[in-house]
View 1 (cartoon, one colour):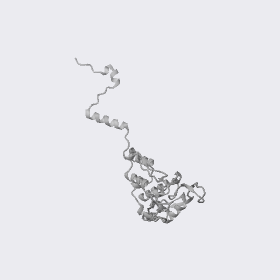
View 2: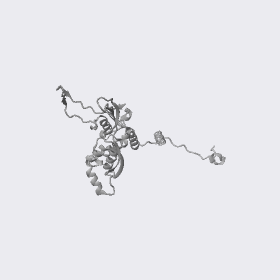
View 3: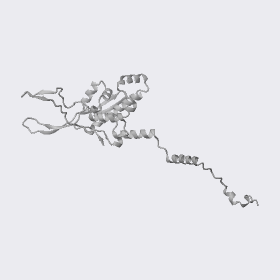
View 4: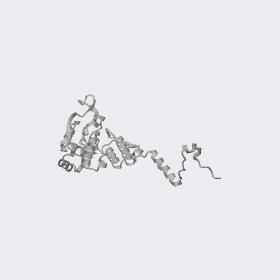
Length: 266
């Protein structure tokens, strides 16, 4: 089984498939899956040290910097919203140096907001975090945030579904069909994100959805022929090769009428 594991993160969804499925999936889809499983996300719950070495103040010893990310757990509920890379952190807390440490779970602050997609010309009610709203402002719009952010940082099935719909609309030039001026304005504004339609239709699909799509395309390109037509074609070919002539037929009434037969000549 082709499975790529990551030891530092628990994804809300993963990409894994068998060798039989590997043959039907397109290469660009598999490459995106590998990139998602191997790419390190942007730091959200910790601040990495950019230096390679640090000095211990007490002894002056030179130490190598080790940027170990915080273990973040992503529940399945984040697939239905846009959490901006935030998740659950399980740890311990001490109110004072002499007190006993107690377990604690840090949860992101969630709220529902109405977000507008300029490409799809649709409003969405989505569960987001404060960091998500800050990222949307940094990217100067909801569409720019969805299209520019990598899948590993979106970390949301909903976000990838929205990205696929936007890219397909741009590839088909289906946005604002009744307003050509607005359509050209949108295509010009988001031209840097455009990809071919054959690739855009696969972005963000789960393995199960990708397999179903591959089967539908295979059936469309190679439609099944009924067995009746195949057998009739083979029989007609055999008859043409053997040159079998049809035997003359005599009517049933002619056989019953004794006077209808001509007498044999002596």
